[in-house]
Amino acid sequence: MLELPIYLDHNATTPCDPRVVEAMLPYFSEHFGNAASRHHAFGWRAEAAVDYAREQVANLIGAEPKEIVFTSGATEADNLAIKGACEMYASKGNHIITCAIEHKAVLDTCKHLEKLGIEVSYLPVLPNGSIDLKDLEAAIRPGTILISIMYANNEIGTIMPVKAISELARKHGILFFTDATQAVGKIPVDVNKDQIDLLALTAHKMYGPKGVGALYVRRRDPRVRLACQMDGGGHERGMRSGTLNVPGIVGLGKAAELAQLEMLEESNRLRKMRDLLEHELLLLDQTFVNGDTENRLPHMTNISFQHVEGEALLMGINKEIAISSGSACTSASIEPSYVLKALGLSDELAHSSLRFGLGRNTTEEEIAYTIEKVSGVVNNLREMSPLWENRNSR
Image 1: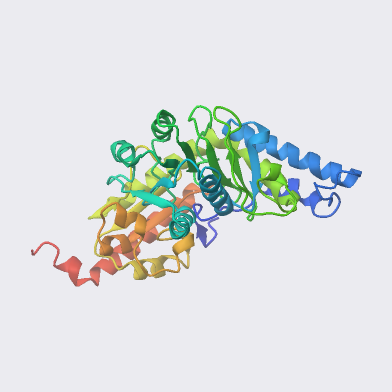
Image 2: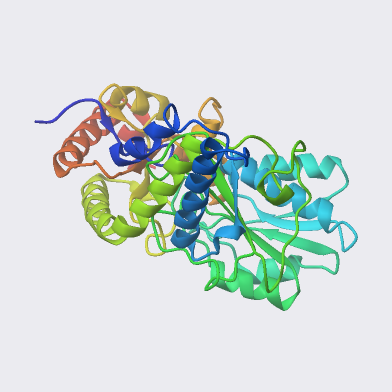
């Protein structure tokens, strides 16, 4: 039986998998020790649980356990990677390269660094949401110390040419950092095959708890060093001080393990449902998919509905279907999505766009209901729109 509301905003966050909750529970009470307490059994047990989670996360991305630094989430990991690299390698230069459609956690970090004298190049994107590698190479200069390009975009799902970016970075002796928040756990990610030096991820995007994430820091070829951004105890090999969130880290580890086991089957299932949703909604006249329709995440789509007022569209849907018009981190803004604007969309079209994010518990019945509901709301709004009525009279 269909239960409302339907949740189709899995790019914003995911529900915690019951198996993850089960793994975490003992570490709130029974095994409550501090992982830094090295003189008794309570601390040893907590430390062992953290070490095991470190292995689980490392296995998911093809890393070594010692290359995993636990953080409070991807935002902190982004800050540590970018600020830590700029501070550590300041003697080599003060220029970094990023992209116009990065998550705000990266863009705002770069804006902060610009106030401190760091020079930042913001690459434009092609209409499909990917960067042009020629633009990237042209932006490189002798003082470039870091390239920060996301693995996959959170609003349109476009997957960046990560391997080609890393090859350019290696060619010029520049570190390559990728915010892989949306990619890890959804598609195969291998830091060695892709030659990634720094990578950020978070638990709550892959059915783990909120408030815990990790930064991958390469240990060899090259050995990457970062200046810590949080002092006070030297935890996490001196890169991130603070008492470890043992239950959260256990949850992140379990979520990573489940993703590694189930990712392929889950992605195939979600891709089929996403394609059905997209196909049916595109039967509506003047409806468009935003971003790359080939090289993209399997569980999501972003669709624009011409001549439909965006706020009215959301209001007509969101009591029954949890959905968004862009990033959760910018949902309070009345401005059109900066990601869609960077693709070349008009303000009107950007405002009339919806992001559909399917997830582990999404059913075919929910997709069928969503197709019917969204189609009905779009048609009703267009009937009231003078722009729609006059569309063929110009």
